[in-house]
Length: 172
Image (cartoon, rainbow, N blue to C red):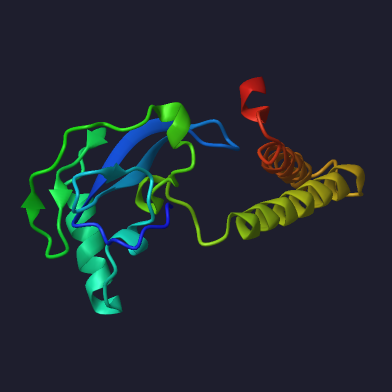
């Protein structure tokens, strides 16, 4: 964000594809450009700085800017009232310089509220199933039909634990 005493007259959202920093998956990134009254453009600005609004108006501002943004490329210039206005067609800096832009939360894969809690449950159930299966297979019930259930429990627990290892799905 560049400090400027002059407030922009319009903002646009520019979408582009990149790879996520940690998982190296394709992600849609959105950057914001601000059109100043003198006709100059500031790239990669903070939307809240570019178009200040009351809390009740913030969701309307975000919807007006994002609903008009295409899947890839720059959307139209939008003023503070949500109207499309004329502005320059400059696409801005290349993708390598726009790495600072943040991915839109709505474009990320859907997850549970906490991915770590899901992993903990899976790890706990996997260890419990594996332990129960080994106890049944090694214990006095191994020669009964419960022995088969023990083998199934042990295999299910092992599969649940292997699923927690990154890139383990390539093995099977």
